[in-house]
Image: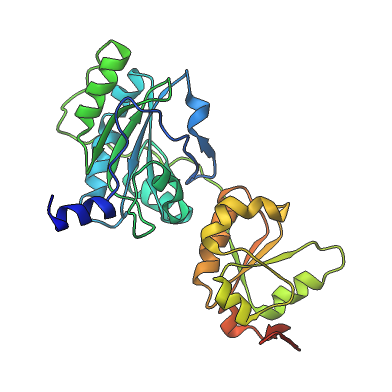
Length: 294
């Protein structure tokens, strides 16, 4: 085996093996619903389309291919979901623009995609992959790249023991876009550091400041009122906060905290704030070099 081949094997996940138990994926849909694979067990088959980028060439056509056959998937008692690391508002806008009849799931930092072996091993992004999970929780189809929807349907037909319903009209045509479904999530509110401290200082207000930077950034300079949870740990550790409401997110410049705030709204959080400019623009109390600065 050549060095290049060995290197590729180290850096590239092999997608789930057909017949193996599937990871019990659990993510938030672009309209705010919490989607858990285990909830479909013994009831429905599930197809996951992992998307590397909603802006990548070919992504829209790939998803529309599945949209055009959605009635066939439904005839085999199968639901379809897309999976991507973009924020829920971006996924929602993208889905609506295409008129898709299935939701897109928000996977921050591709954590669940990694567990499904459908992400890059060196970067927090999804790798284009189609995975179908049967009602018994086992993988019935797995293919890297933009797998053809007909191939997935054939695998599901074999599992169900019957053919999918025939397509209505011309298979080569794309159905007209349906009306966009009603969606509603709590938007993230942007505030400056003065307003953030005012919220935290409210008697009985219960607002919590979360610093989502790395440990070295936090240790060097932070608000004395902040709880430190790095953004890549937030999906696993947010329960430590004991609440998903009245949360204020801060990072160095405002980008990572915006993503953290979006994640919190996606799991049902309300009154979620992002500090504009982050600690770079923080004018209030801060601990620098281990000393409190007023």
